[in-house]
Image (cartoon, rainbow, N blue to C red; front, side):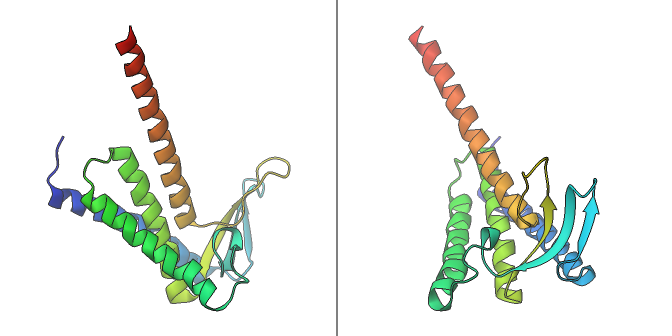
Length: 174
């Protein structure tokens, strides 16, 4: 099904806005209703909510950096990546639907966390999952989930596409 470029752009921006909105609403709820390092446990404390202000990037990487390096790594590079990604998906129309959705999720998560760094000076993280034994996540947020989901969608799409191409190649050989 072909969708005209304007409608396609509107759909992309709508999904992106929903993605960013869910992230920002969840962070606002946590900022307004939880104290720093307050922990609320669910499912025998395997899933917890804990408000943490992350001044770095993923798993607090870069929080001890200072000056221009910190600004470049945590503000400028993410901004450039988000702008490049948005331009890519708006102008490149032959992207598979799943790859497009994955990129939208990655951009949405990036924008959500970048917005927090610019407006609040840190990113609000609040979810933690403890699996069995010592296996557990760091504290994360909806934007982080969006980025990971986007990467997962792109990887699965690439795998399925490669499998289909392999099947076509094998059929052509016979």
